[in-house]
Structures are given as C-alpha cells and as structure tokens.
Image (cartoon, one colour):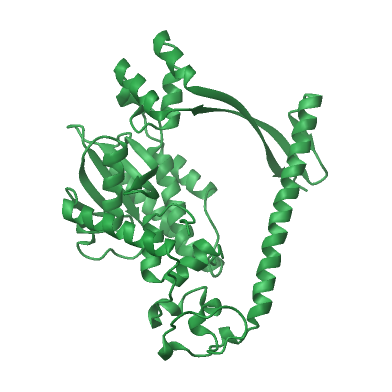
Length: 390
C-alpha cells in the first residue's frame, strides 16, 4: 500500500510507539478524543505566532498579544470549566513573562510557523517549525516551543524532531543550521545545541525509510504496554483487548497473550459501535456535501444579483474575496529570482513572499513578465457565516 499521508515526526513516533494505533488514526481515520494539553499548547503557540508574525516593527503590545490569546483560546478537551480556567490563567502568565523577557531584544524572525513538505530518500515528509531566525553570519537558528511538563535533561542533543527540522531547513532554505533549541515556555528555559551530527541525521533518515517500508507492507501489529494502553482512546477497538475468539472483526496475527483480558470497555457491543461510527461519518460527509452545495447556490445568486451580504432568520453570510497565485515551475521561479539577485527575498520559496515580490511596484518589468508567464492568478470566493444575536 502507499503511505496514507506524508510522514511527520509525530506520525513516525506514533508508529514506533504502536503500529496498530497508527493504523487506527491514519489508515482507518478514527478520530481520538480532544486532549486539553494539545488545546492549551495550540492556544499559546498561536499567541506567540501573532507576537512574532508582524512584517514590520514595532512588536505588538502585550495587551494585543493577550487579547489575541483570549480571542483564539481553544476550549476542547478540558474535563470541566475549573480545569479550563486554571490552564487559561497559566497561559496568560506564560505570555506575560515571555513578553517581559524578550520584548527588549525583539526581532522579526526569518520564518514563523514554517510549513515544509519535501522527500527524504523518496519518502514524503511534512512538518511545521515554530520559529526560524537568521544569524548574522547567514546561518539558521531553529526554535521549537514546548508547553508540557519539564523536558528530559539534554533531550535537545539527539531529539528526532529537531533533527528533522535541521534536514528540512538545509534542504529547502539552502542555508546551514547553526543552532537548535527547545524552549520550555512554563519555565522560560532553553535547551540549545549547535546542530545535530551527521551520524544522528543518518540514523533519522534510516528510521524514516524503515517506518515507511513497514507501513507500505501493512505491518500494524499492536505493541501493548500497561502505561501506553491505559490512556489509549482506541482500547475498545484494539484486537489485544478483544475476546480471543473474536467472531466479529479481524484478529491480530499475534497479540500479546498476557494482555488478552476482557476489559470493561471491551464488554461494549463492538459491531454496534462500528456501525454507529460508520453511520456518523456518513452523516457528516452528507452534511458537508449538502452545505457545500448550498454555498455554491448562494455564491451563484450573489454573482447574479451583485450581493455581498444576505440575512436569514438565524444567520448572515458575507462575501469573501481573495486572490490566489499558482506557479507552474518552482525551479524556474527560483532561477529567475537568483538571476535578478533577489533570491534572498523569497528564500524557501514561500508563496506569499513570491507574490509580494511580484506585486512590488519597483520590480523590474523583465523579471515581472517572466514570473507572470509561470503563474496563474485566480479570484477565489467564499462565505463567512455568522450567527445572528437574539
């Protein structure tokens, strides 16, 4: 089988933890329950992305950062309102202390939330880097924020996530990485290393190809352990925790005998759960398809009538228009930018930077014509839906 999606550091780690769990999440596409610690981490990360995401100085004020944090707070996964409020206050405290520590030396990073897609020895890889700074000597400094428990001592020395970031930066951005950092936000402390050695890089490349090969061969044997299985959302569905006879479903080739116990969760009617899950997914898909058709009809009427806004009894919709560019050959675009001596302005190349260059009024006409030949400009339309207040 082909890979169901590009590998990331988290999906590689998940497969190594338990191939069966990887299958549930990425092959069967069974969602897990929301986790409060993921919501908390994402909320704080988004606020820092806002803080460092400005294109020109000055930096946003502390009030603006906290306001953004409040407006983009993610509530999913908390057990109750008390726990959510405790974490919310912790996040505010982290942002205040982080701001006070770093506002004096604030600089606009080279990239914030840098999304990358490339191949490692033929295996598609994807990921996102919290922050990349450019050092005075033209090298790159990579920072990954952590909001969880204290980091293991010297984790930065060999961590595969940072190794992957190093490979991605050097292959896609064309500059060497001189600094890798885990920044533990609750303590405002960093673990820093100059870079990972070629031996560590080679080991990660081998791991990537090994994991990809195992997935392609459909090797999804469970890897049970008391600690891992205790909190696993897929436990009711896992073959390790089903009856050894298993009249329904497909059994594992070799489940661990010592853990084949009929648990309380497994006592549920598994076939009924499977059918309910399938029916729910069908309803969601049907609802999404119906909503998409309704949107198309509204957009068609907007086009016909010249409307930009419409009201129902419970909702309103506003017309959103945005321009999108597509470039047919990235290598030709890079060659044109290098020839013009402005490759540094679009290093990556990141699409919005190329568009920014293309729309620069001072851009040399010859280069502009060349980029236009490689591009296609489309006008996309969408709807913004808002509930009406009572």
